[in-house]
Length: 437
Ligand SMILES: [Zn+2]
Image (cartoon, rainbow, N blue to C red):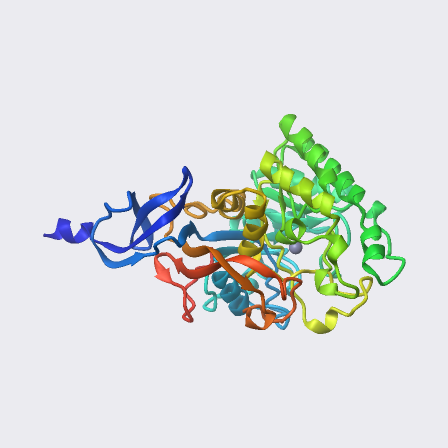
């Protein structure tokens, strides 16, 4: 009797479109104790306390967004853990990794991490992990942060936008890499070479774009790759916006440098030619570039030079988005919209849901060392998303869970809708059930 009881799953979800690591097709996924305990053919699942049949609605693993600026504590009016994680769940994201800057204090030592964890505790709808920060003078804090559980360290080579998180110079970068390599950690880099950046010569988008050329990214990637090769550190280039980065990245990897890279939904779906005048909800650093550049980024994804697509959700209050590209806050809000924005463009370009899942779940989970996340597989956490891939909707910013109603996607028609999100086998609702990882 007891053996039979144990064989009954808590939950079985069937779909004609289950996106598994080996491909997409009809299947049934069984969940017990918050874990995936079996993947069966569509009509052969075991008994379960609860049965869900999604029909033609797809079943995806919960997405893993490794680039989210939550901003709490300190700038909670920009975004907080409760609102960010509700937005994540509504967008099919079941794990976020929080960036170390824009909150106060920045996460640059173990005490600051403890403050951040305390702020997050008990109010997260999805799972939350943390990046630490590498800034001038804190090399001695990196190992304690690593031991306290951060997934890696973020640094800037150019000014970050906030005074309390200064960039590393060449010596500082090398010192951070040597230290991080000593415990085989990961350094994630905002790569723009400050020597090639300038103040915009006017308030418009063309002047802003001209002030942050693709060459600045390319040069910075070359520097990071050279130093990563020299020190042996694992390095990752954040938010690649310029296709000029693709060749240096590919070359470094051919030479055995441990370097990976990501891009973001806005670089893949928006383009400079379409940024309306004064519409600084489109401002981010590095900037959204030309349509031709966007095509090249898609090629980089298809080739595998770019491995991850993550949001770089970096919100602010609306008052900081003044209609002047030189003065406005640089950051795009999109946490809830990344999946549908990317899927809309991916489908148009002939990619499948399996590609999107690889870029937005499997690879980010691997980057941040999040075992049991990012794939529908036996033994993994039952973080799952029912995704109606064919539904079409028009984005209305007032319906998003983001704390502030600012996003360049407002009014855009996107394909796909998240129907249900499960975290460890439980439907994500109003009751915060996320874990701090
Ligand atoms: Zn960022």
